Length: 479
Image 1 (cartoon, helix red, strand yellow):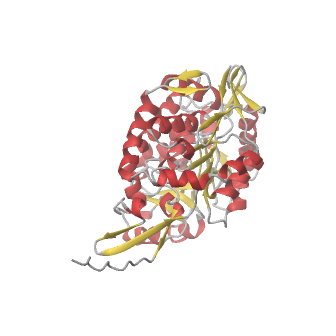
Image 2 (cartoon, one colour):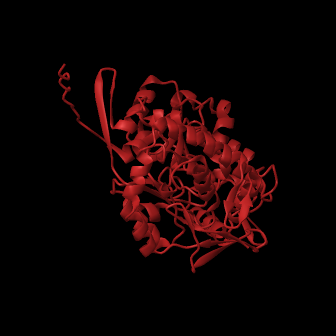
Image 3 (cartoon, helix red, strand yellow):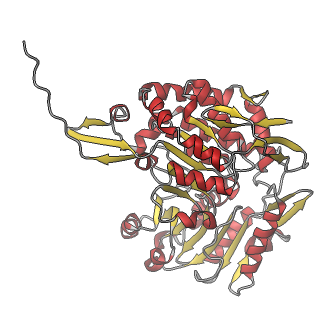
C-alpha cells in the first residue's frame, strides 16, 4: 500500500504511528500516512531560524522563477511519494477517492493552485499593494520618494489545513515567496495537495529545510499554532473561535457570505438568477465565499422559488462522473447530521424548504458508504429565524426580506457579498460597512476571486511588519 511520509526539514520520515486513508466509496485502504508527535514538532521548529536564513538568502526574482518551475511540476510532472511515483492524473484520482470531492472539482481546484504558482508575482504585488518586491531582499525600499521598511514576524508559517476543498491551498502557497518557511498540518483525508506542492517546490529548487509536512493530531495542531508565531487555521466556528482574539493566527472559518439586493434591483432580480445560483452552488457549496443568505427588501418568496426550481434539478452523481455537481461526504454520518440540523431548524415555524417541495424527495441521499446533501433553499419569513443566517458544507441558502435601511445593521459578519444595486447611497453604505470583508458591487458572483487583492486576511502583513527606517548617507571616500 502507498505510504505518505511526513517531511521534517524536507526529509521523508516514516513513523511507527500511522493513519489509514480509505476510498470513500469502497472502503478499501488507499494509503497510510505517518504521524508526527508534539515532541518532534517542537524539536523541528527549534531549527526554523536556520531554515529561514537559508530561504531569505535567495533573491526574490529567483524565487519567482522557482515558483514557475513548481507550477509545471505540480500540474504536469511526476513526484515521488514513498517508494512510488505519482502523475497529475494519479493525484486527482487519489484526491477524489479519499475526500469524496468529484474528480471534476479536484481538477478545477488544482487549476486555482496552479494559477497562484504561475502568477505569484501578481499575487504578491496585490498583497503588498504594488510595492517594489526587492523590499523582500533588503528589508527596505524607496518608492515614489518614500521610504518603506519591513521586518519578518516569524521564522516559520504554520497552516492547519482542511479536507473539504483543495482550492484553499492557494492561500498559503505565496508564503515561501515571502521568504517564510512552511509548516503544514494536512487535513486527515487530504494530504495529497500539500504533499504534492511541497515536493514540487523541492524539485524546483526551494531549500528542503523550509518544507515541513506534519500529519498530526489535535494536540499537535495546537503546538504548530503556538510555536510558529504566525499561522493560518481552517475550520468551523468551534475550531476557530478560541483564536478569535489572537492576532498571530489568520482564521478561515465560516464565511456567512451573502447577496444583498437593493431597492432598485428588487423588481429585476430575475435578470441575475444565473449569478445567484452560481454564488450558492459553485464548487458544491463548500467554499466560505459561497453565499448562504439572500437579503432583499421584497419578492423573497419569488426569489426562493426561482432558485429552488433551478437547484432542485441537481442530482447526486458518482465521484468520477464529469457532470458531478456535488461532493459526497466520505463520512456519511456528517451528511446525516447536517441534513438533520436543517430539519431541526425547520421545526421552528416560519421557514420552508422550497427545494424539497419542488424535488418531491429528501435532501439526504445515501448510497453504500456515501451520503450527499442536495441543494437546499429555505425561505424564511423573518431574518430572526434560526435558519436565516446559517452556513453548511453543501449548497444552502436562506432567502429573507429586510429593508434597505436595516440590512447592514442585521446581516452580521459577512466574508463576501454580492450587492445588486446602482443606488449611490447604498453603495456608499456598503463601502463603509465593517461587516463585509470582500465586496462585489453589481452582478459579480462572490465565488469569482481576484488574486491581485487579499482573499481573506493579508499574508504579507501577517508575515512582515512595517517600521520606520532611516540610514545615514556614507561620507565620500578620501582621495
